[in-house]
Length: 503
Picture 1: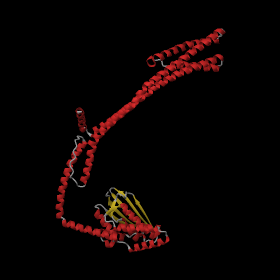
Picture 2: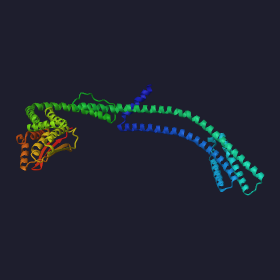
Picture 3: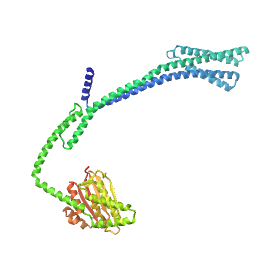
Picture 4: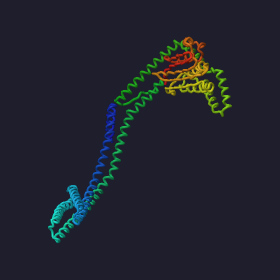
């Protein structure tokens, strides 16, 4: 018992000293060895079973071939003796060739076939050789009319007796072969029955070895990595209270763990120092921070004003349209309109976040455009082409709907034939580009320049609270965010927003 524990301990120490590359090679070698042993064992089993039984079947087949050939030759000989036609001669010669071939193919190895079969085969070979000579001499004498009737009959019956003799020996050979084959089969069957037990033992040993190696891998490779990942998540949450990860590995994982522990302590000390500096900076710049807070509150108030700003004309026309549709329809379209309007109010009043998913903004735009289409009918068309994953991109709250509303009110509604609004969103580098374009009346170059100047100086009285608020929020929320507006009189207006990707 002590020797086994000592051997296991030594094996574990040796395993800990391996590098990751050596461990992977060791595991791969074990797997290859197990697979190779399994294949070799299966080949041995197949060779033992197939070769042994195949030899028995081949011996039986050759003996039966000889017996059948001998009987066929005897029949062909009788027919040829009675009928001297070319056809009977051809059949006779073919039967003789088959018998000669089958005699030569009979197993004649004493060590393999044994004493009894060897003696029978020897008798068949010698008997067939003598029989062939008498048979050929008889046919030659008959052809030359060299026999008297008495001699002819005696010689003919002598050949018949020799054929019977060879047939009897063939039957004895078949019986002896069958008996030896049966004995060999019964000798192999117990061994075959033991093979499943051997396979089971080898399977248990293979599974045990694999399980032991997997346990060592789990303990010395997986567990340290999992603990590192867990502590890393806590460190990401600014929690450095966890104890150091302790491993015995001398490989790359051990080096990684020890380096991680050092980095954790260094980062903890750095953050502590940074916090102290930040506290001092907070005290020194308290007034500046308060001013920034006031500006943020003003921005929030402006955002709330924007959210609560509802165009009375829009509400009046929408509600009037809902009332008319309720009279003309069973309620399907009305229900859809009420749902869209409810979604807009809900989004206005119950979205306190400064950023939301792009998917939410697109849904609000769809609801708003549905209501406007009910109002303008075929005069208004819109298309949304989103080439990014809207369920992972964050954008400022209440960004798209005010731009679309401006496009409808200032662009499409003033155009007698109406127009279309197209929203296109794509990703370029680490930024999301949002384009809101309409085919409305557009602006002159002079008005466009005035609008751009008003946006730059934050003059909401000249550009409106919607576009001005969006312009300011994008530039304050993102260092590299951008808001651009383009327009051409009689052709339409396009607003281009650039927002960094925040996952």
